[in-house]
Length: 257
Length: 329
Ligand SMILES: Nc1ncnc2c1ncn2[C@@H]1O[C@H](COP(=O)(O)OP(=O)(O)O)[C@@H](O)[C@H]1O
Ligand SMILES: [Mg+2]
Image 1: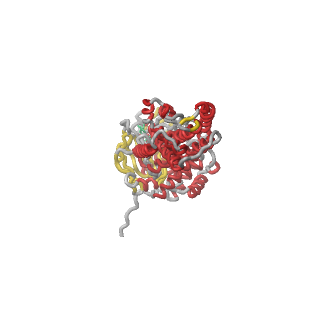
Image 2 (image 1 turned 90 degrees about the horizontal axis):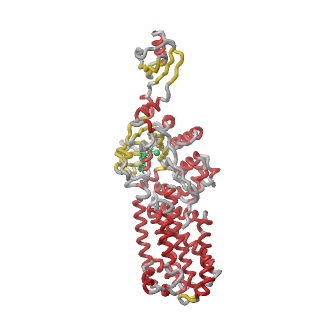
Image 3 (image 1 turned 180 degrees about the vertical axis):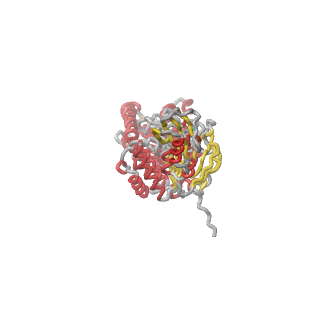
């Protein structure tokens, strides 16, 4: 199939992916919005007022970028892992495998679908945040590019998880035991300046720290880490994640018999 | 003036498949299906029908051998080969939570049809398959027969030259089966080559011009339907006779099988007339009380070709039971 054909197939997958999470919005858009609104209320409003300043800002202002990023990470991951695993489980992946759609087209379709959900929930959370605090964006370019790159990385991670997953347990293990701890310890709620230097150093090995801080830098102009290091890391993750996903999909050892 | 022959709709040579658990499902299958044919691949459960189809439409990776569809090799020219094929798998493999129309339109998109084009095609085929009224229904709630027709509409949306159906009428009731046969015959008349697998012999007999029989991963017969039926031209009549018959009873010119002292089975060839049988019986002063035809001869011959006839059982579909296509994390 020529480029036009692949482009149509790509649009079809993206459309289907967006249609899927919109159709079940009660499961896909509402719960994360409620959870994060509760974080705003509890950490930002109730406890935050006692914490005082963090990184030179009110705690509420400090925590909002972290929580937006948390929404983007969790939802781009969740979308791709659920959708692709479901497709595998119900075997409608075969609809794609019998058609002349290139692997790269399939992968790009799922990534953009995951990004769409991450950005959709991220936007809802941002709107909710406006009820609690003012938001001014320090640098739009950095803010937006950080969100996009992070959404790509976690769409890819979700995709790899789904390829290996053989049961519904397999797609909740990683989010529960790996992703959530990494997010919570990744500077969403605090500046690593607060940590003893040993733990601060350990934290530097957590990639999510770079994403959260990169995004926070875009909005507030403060960061625990060097912004270029954050970009470097994200780009490396995108390249590795994309190559691994494409390899697994092309080999398709878990998809074809 | 020489004209090159048009390529076969399907050419399979030396196809072997060993599954990852070491099971050899195909032991060197050769199969040729001409363009325009209505072809049956007949075989009992586990014979390798679905595996063969899986390889043709790239859902199963082959171990060795070659497959080409209208001259396009599935290895070297996979996009062109895939475009020629529409497949209706044995098991339901659409998203159970998606609406009927969306399933068909989306499939068109995978073949490069724009949404507009795909909607037109989807309407055409859903109407033909009597599913247009159900277009906004979630596919999970369709009846078994409707689900199967949905998969046929989905397979036709890109208007393939070769339609492959894997046991399309398994689990479909007899009335719907007939209307599905009519539909497939129309599709075939309009120029689409059709291959179907079945273990219903009646289906192959009434639909198909050519037939191959597969068993335990090998083709055991491959000919025109007519040829195969000619081989089966012998008819077995069961006669109940008033007089007692000795168990070594024989009749000149006929093959007899003694069942009990008042019953014999007699085989007669197509050239022989039933009259001559009665003349022979009369000469022996035997009176026939009743006469009937012994059960489906094709069925018998089919079973006689198989290595392990006991496997000739009905198929079932796996059932999914989960409630939504989203998992919370
Ligand atoms: N994924 C698999 N792994 C191992 N063996 C398989 C697999 N799929 C099918 N088989 C075996 O291969 C044989 C042929 O299966 P199949 O092609 O589905 O037969 P049919 O469609 O004629 O009923 C069967 O014995 C089946 O158990
Ligand atoms: Mg089968």
